[in-house]
Length: 155
Image (cartoon, rainbow, N blue to C red; front, side, top):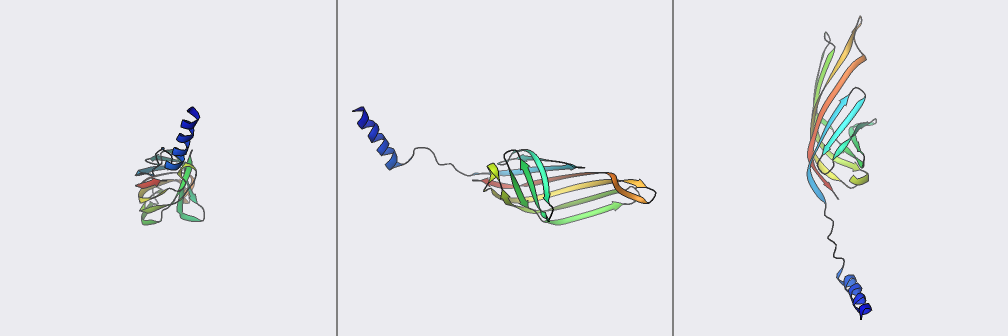
């Protein structure tokens, strides 16, 4: 009798399907804060993609930026549509700002298949060194802060 009940239970689960819940996509507000300082980059992710990672820019296409986290990476198509810059040759200080819209172009690892879009804006400053010939980038300091916010869906 016990074998009959087990067999009926198995047949029933095959015919009716699994009782495990379906995995739903995760959609949520996404924020990245990017800090570039001289040769160091840090990205802080909050939302469906969370954690601390690094930033890199495609050397062949500056509109593509990649944030790499321990569980995977996400590449954004982020063309800058708002830009301004100024440089003070007396102080050897340059300032710039930028902004635009982004879309998720590619993702790997735990974020594979991610989709999303939003806006970004940032500002940066470069302090060069004064030489007899004027300003020099050599020995200069650089910092950039950017905020990326929108919506991300993970499959």
